[in-house]
Image (cartoon, rainbow, N blue to C red):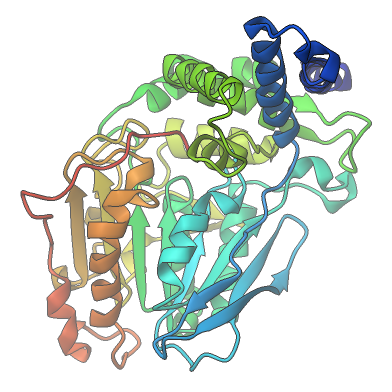
Length: 445
């Protein structure tokens, strides 16, 4: 499959379905069709509208769509998205709130590079903006990056995070969501040893595969069942002629989308059938719940082949983070060097992507960190999506994360102990109350 023809074939299929949808919608909307009302014609137009919208969204990067935020003065403040650091494979961007006082909490959100754009965390950003100065990693679609930019694997990803943390300085609180959790932990350890003055205050790891073998899931089992040769032969393609990255080896976003949908195929099929019915009955709207979710969910990006393959080989198969054997640029990263970065893990009880046990393993790996600077939270009933963007995040997890950030925002003594931060005692292991609301159904990230 490592040829451009297979990539261009998938793009041709996508474009054809988009065209068929647009044609069906246009034909079913002809005034002449209304002379003799027929439910089949209405259904055809509805099918066309949903189909055209779905297939066109697959190649469009969603907009952040965050216009303003209410400040503690009760006024709306305009939000602008500014690029703080620009790199070939991803940028560090800042949500600048105009006219607002300087916030005490500076947060770096590390977004996944696992098929979707950083905008998947839009609701997470929106929930944090009223209380924090928010930055986020904005990864680029590999199909738009010329081959001349070189490779990008998990070591490069880790070094990008190191540079972003250096840029923001030592008063930063890092929140890593899902896939980047192990690499963010490695980046923090790298800084702790190489440039301790630049390391962040705290690190919150949400639903990440620190130790994929701790609690196996379908995702981790897949990595064990196939060889690297099989994976490369079946998943890797070269970008076709339509994009700037022509010739670059990637794990295509459209192929990833097929995997995402297959994991919950019946649920997605029912959702689209219901949406077609609502459109036919004129009950749907441009910004209804279905469109808001799928406009984001269907927008996928290509990953560089070396990033995808090295993730599977070194994080899931080799367990390099779980065994504390990860190497960056020829240097072994020792997670035990983390001595004064408070670490909190968050897991969802019903998470079928990174099951409970995989993320909390980070605390045992931080052997140089006092127990008073470690915290863990298991959210009852929550799925994968719910722990960072759903109701569980909004109602339970977000307040706990902000409390953890505040508890670890005091003076720091580099290489010191928890005694240098008296408030850290508040960050002891926290369990959600028994009556905590159920989380959202897990969706792939």
